[in-house]
Image (cartoon, rainbow, N blue to C red):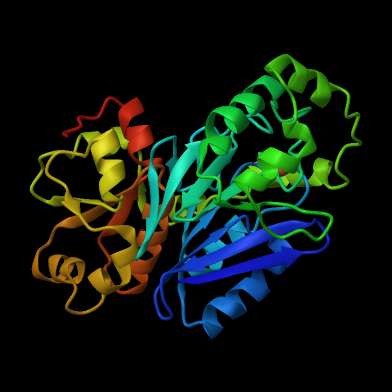
Length: 345
Ligand SMILES: [Fe+2]
């Protein structure tokens, strides 16, 4: 297992790079924009392929690296289903598994610091975002924060993990890097309360100044920019409504880029092929199934995913590989559902 804890001293943010082996797929949690070059250098040095970039929540104190990482590596960007952010290409919710080759993280919804805060459990450790910090907890006074919800996330979820679970937070300003659930339960001053009301009272009296970067970071993190506008301007996009009319037509191949779990949860367009986004490169290169499909038939290749972000990147890659019939459904399955498109299980 490869595990790297990286630090941004300006915002006090920890970023985590995870992979199961050298030469394999990698995932990054809470990347900071200004540090993207450093992450990509490390990814290269360790011979990794970055396939997912995850934010635990919309950050107020730094600009996320998700958009630039996506543009430079074509990775999948992941946040919770509550995040009102345009860059996201995959959304997770409580009980999901966040996976890359050889690694699986259990997704826990832990709102309170913000209403879109998530934690991720990986074997002996948990990435707690700003929900549980070392000897602290994330503030609850803006971004739809709620001390009552945070109490439930802490006492009802995180503190129920095994005592020796390692705690890796999104921030620390004192230089602490890792703790454990038992240690936090015993020594975290915010967790020494006897009731939810006592916790709410404690949090309401903090009177913290707003983060320096807040007015810049929050708007920047909500509007990172989508890959889809560019694709539409080149005429490689169909609206969901136009795509619905093509179901069952022999001249069109619907190609689903999502993962198995997303297909099971949200349904699939009837008759579509499954070609997961992480395998795209080998599928569109000479000898790959999509390359064969495009060259051996006259079928139009219509990619789709959850929100249209992965499929927009796929169209770009497929067109670059000479597959001139590649296009995608703008807005993905989300738009497809809104257009009343049929779905099979
Ligand atoms: Fe935060």
